[in-house]
Amino acid sequence: MQPVQRVAQSREQAAMRKLGQSQQYLDEQCRKLDELRAYREQYTREFESCGGGGLGAMRLQDYRVFLGRLNEAVRQQEAIIAKCQSQHEKNRQLWLETRGRAQAIENVVQGYCREERRQMDRKEQREQDEHAQRPRRK
Image (cartoon, rainbow, N blue to C red; front, side, top):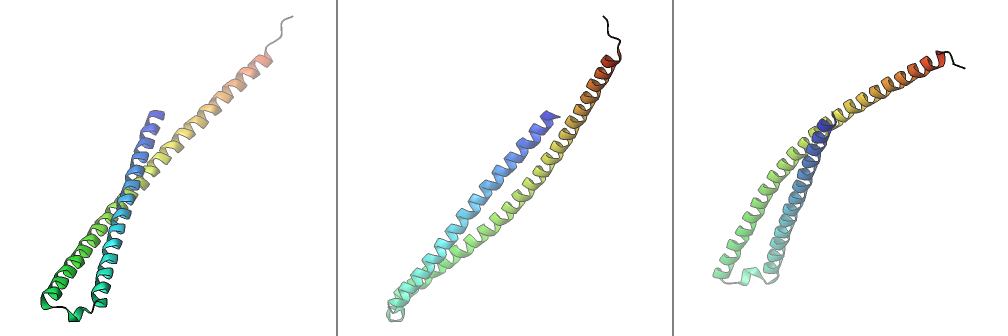
């Protein structure tokens, strides 16, 4: 049973690593989204502080185009994060399942070990009882 237990533990560890990696990737994508939003806010503030209304039509058009691109980048990053969150949840469920299996196998192995010890203890007790009942030679 111990080889089965080792395989189950190995699978649990692999699932745990995968879960950790998906968490890191999700965190990285969230940071990117935060950076995009911060840049968009900064760009908007700078434009407004320069008196955006007094700029020429061409400059105003450039601002709107660039702001549209930033907004699209934010939407795309939000979609990426939604996919990452979904994948992370799948990885978490997989880890919970493999963890449950590994714990169940460990419980079975421990039960076998306890039973084996009880049988050994009974055998030793029988041998001691038999030894104590034998007549002693002088």
